[in-house]
Length: 300
Image (tube, rainbow, N blue to C red; front, top):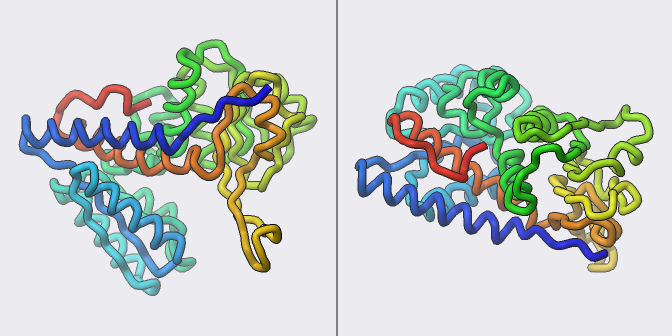
């Protein structure tokens, strides 16, 4: 069996087009332009790349982009004061503080200072609780993107067995909550799970979000299962030359693709969906703030 490739790059482009269409309607019908504020503290190279990409795509879909770049030694008080100003700014509908933060800043304190209605990352404790209790919440972008791809590929998820490998607050736990809401039977597997291969082999859906390169191999996968690989790991690639690296997922792609019915590649799978869902969340936050109908097909 050769798995169908779930093209996250193409899917994300479709989501961005849907967001752009609805942003245009917001402007023409209501005179409203969604605004996304991104806060970057320090000069982490990867974070700088992410922020530039987010800003570019925000503008491309017709939204306003507000970037706040702060020095690495910015005090916690100054950062919290900026967040307070953004919370109070009616032109800002979404606030994202790029992680990781410098070590002297308390990430939990900073995240929970964001207005939950503007928390487009879905990390605020209020949104975590709302999601866990089945209420309307801002949903973390990566799990939302995974859910969108699963719904598109499989249709109804009701009654399917799903295994989430990984229990992080950013992906594993919210992913499990979303699958439960879609009536899957959900297991969260992790480093202490006994006979983990047997657990994953029972699943119709495997979400790999453990952060270990190529940990999951084809003999972990039930024939025909759908595999969503959230992992992004950089490993040495001597075949490309000395000092060269390549990106791989948490799944060993070739062996898993021989068994699975469908699989996301790395790169080009889940990654592009994360930024697309950030834009979707900003649109959703804007609609909620203005008492307007939420965008169809772009929420959980």
